[in-house]
Image 1 (cartoon, rainbow, N blue to C red):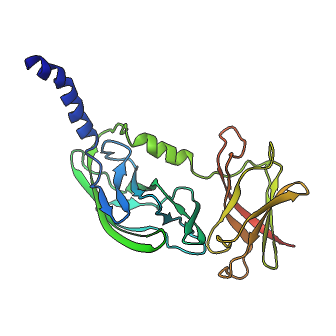
Image 2 (image 1 turned 180 degrees about the vertical axis):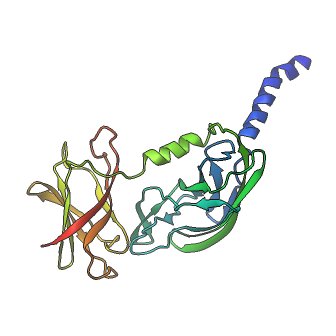
Image 3 (image 1 turned 120 degrees about the vertical axis):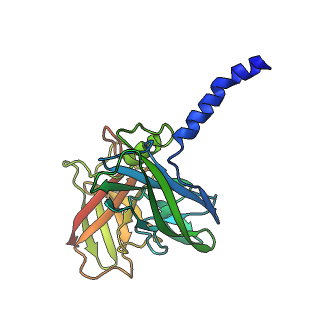
Length: 284
């Protein structure tokens, strides 16, 4: 028995260390088809430096929430932070969208597990050794064949330290989130956009290889019908993506703004899947 205990001692110590490593993870809540909580990429926060938190959502199979710009249907997740004095929150950063279906209507959203990142800036340094509590009121709409609005109060307590080390579980997930964020296209890659009576033409420069298996534009605001087909065809100098104007589009729009997705990536060294576009509209 003594030998068994001695053999198990390193495992017990490892378990305790893992427990300490997870001390800065907020309480996980299961609300309907969603599981969620607040997580951090480091073990505590440095007393004079900015830091990031993530709102983690894991959705049951068949359920989704919505992107910042949902399209024809949907409402994006929001948060109203309640912060300690001297701490300021930045904008909630969404993961890139995918096409999702609300019943028979196509929209922009997320499935599975995703993070939503937020940067926090201390305007005055916290004291080393103190614990700060970050909390907020969170709201969302989750849908499958039906929709469920949801609300929750989430919080996390963070230990203030002179210096911090990365959390071995969450730091890689934060890094992956950042790697998957949309980027600006190269300066020598020049797409263009034009408008016509019932939509827009997004002209895409020639791409390496054969016709891409999937190219999709995720428009900002309600400029583009998310439920309408997007037709990719050969153009004079590359490809043309035909987009349908939304009946809810504001009049007098001068730019086509959103994310351009290619399943195979865009062929640069980093090979991102999403380019961030803001193109002036010419008249066709």
